[in-house]
Length: 335
Image 1 (cartoon, rainbow, N blue to C red):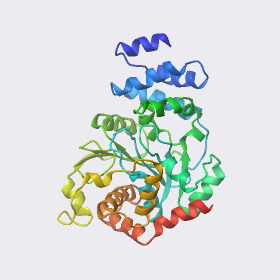
Image 2: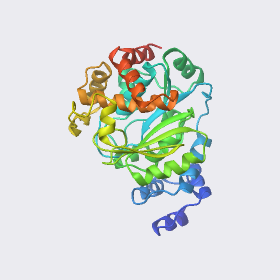
Image 3: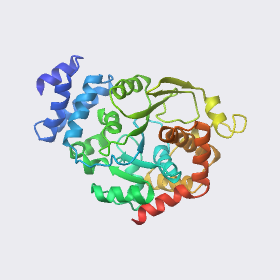
């Protein structure tokens, strides 16, 4: 371990095998927490290589509790976090709108570490009970179209450093790995990242898989489509660019909405964010809040049904305004 630390501090990179063995060693108690945090935070100073990402992911997927949800043509919708923008829970809201539109969602998430409120904080506060039982998760997908995989109940390795990550308050390599280690291994993924460099790393990673994916990077540093700026968009078909004007035209029109970044702000604590989450899911968000979740939902739906972004925007709007999205949450909590 000392040799790995020395190499990393000397700006060398890990091989795929070294990265994998690091996390396996951590899981077996062979690496102390101080060493582990030192290694994980190094990636705040440089972007991990593709080899390192593959090695870390291989370890976590081998160590995690296994489930089989491959019978479902489902999507995961997630941002990497760590962008320090303190937005409301856009990706989690998007999941319920997509499920309300009749599609399947296997959402993977956790408690907050580098943000104020994570998706797990929201759902736990609303009364959702985390589970890693395959039959329960399949039942949720069958009945309401969505299930939630709380990362720590599948990835015990993540629990080892959970307190230290929260105290640190900054992103670590685990922020970047989170979207890649969904135990349900959904066939589709909409992934938002705050860095163009990291977006390209994900792009290289997914090119070697059979996944249907879309990677979104907002030019102004958000890890979701926020309508505050243009986006880069990577899919198996290549790289695209969407101007903010084009994104606005997909919705209610560029001349009828004022882009106000402050309206993306989340609350000061989990309680405030839960209230905000519930209000938006009830169709009572501001015009801008609604537009942000609808445009993200439209892109996610297009991954699943291959229809146009414009048509899927209309489906997302109907899901939110009709109350179907909120009803998905209500039914999920009742199971």
